[in-house]
Image (cartoon, rainbow, N blue to C red):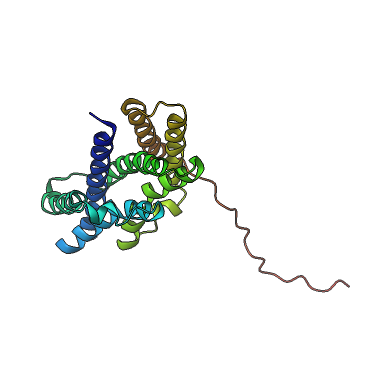
Length: 216
């Protein structure tokens, strides 16, 4: 299997799992069929569209290659019809989201590097590619985006992007090492959820309620 074929398969797999994640969240919000497919489409392809626009690849693959839009739509529709068989819907959403985060981190970073974006910029693009779909999904379903909460989400994607950039710089960007980088992001995200790891937040001091009077 060539690197380009492996990259395409990873990209389409990421589209499918993010579409399933978005569709599951939409089903949980009781949206109709069109709403479920639309949220799945945005969740699956929003980050990739951003990536392609930034690296000046127009039109974006989501519109230029029918396989991307078809994969997203078919997966989302399948989730709509099969959701009664999906037990523990919230857990399913979280696992699928972690898988999509991992796959899109790797493919987004690699595509940015292939477009000759410097490593630091490629890592940022890889991270934004990974979190963009989830951001759109949460906004459309009326949730506070995961990336803005205390959870380890964008940090996991950025960590994976840095690993991909290092592998590429040292000439080890083969299928095996890149798969290991994706697994790292996936496991880091799930472990963070399991152990409730979180990023620090600013400590807010309570406002003073009393006013000190003048000294005698």
